Length: 206
Ligand code: OGA
Ligand code: MN
Image (cartoon, rainbow, N blue to C red; front, side, top):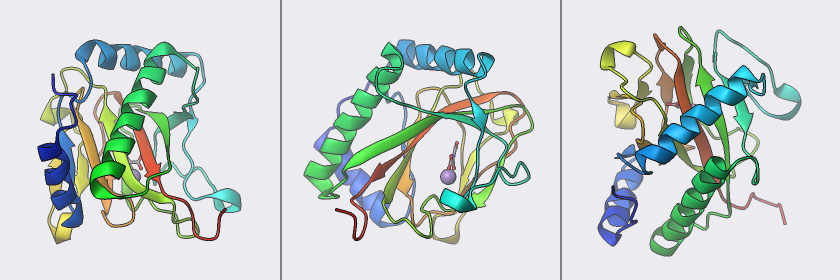
């Protein structure tokens, strides 16, 4: 298990991010916690707590399943022990990133994402046009025994290249929200993740 945020790793992360790439870290959290998070995501889905994800922001928000077909629920502190453990881990990562990369990340927003079989998310950037706070995107996958033929890869386009990342349980992927074009290829079975954004203070927001 490698949950320590070593200086070596943070340095390598800084280089990769500066180059506009994706940073992949396997076994970011213990398998037992990943399984609890997967169970929690399935339970919330079964309870009807996840809603079809919208694209855009504010008044321009709309559900477009031809663009993205996942269902999501935003996390709040205190919802469950396992999501609180995840939020704490992401906050430790936020502080480590601020210490070593001087990113000035102020907070972290995140949601469960549930892609039913057949769902996908077309190519996009994560930063909104009218809100520049999202700085680093972080996706943690919760899928035990995922095979490449199950589809559902995260496809990134770093520097015009194509890079496919298999959504394996415990794998964390980080990239710059304003820079990296990416998409989720159609999944052939249920695909679970926790997706979030480290945010900076917005321009003109005090
Ligand atoms: C997103 C997204 C990637 C993934 O939710 O914005 O691009 O691999 N997710 O789930
Ligand atoms: Mn995205």
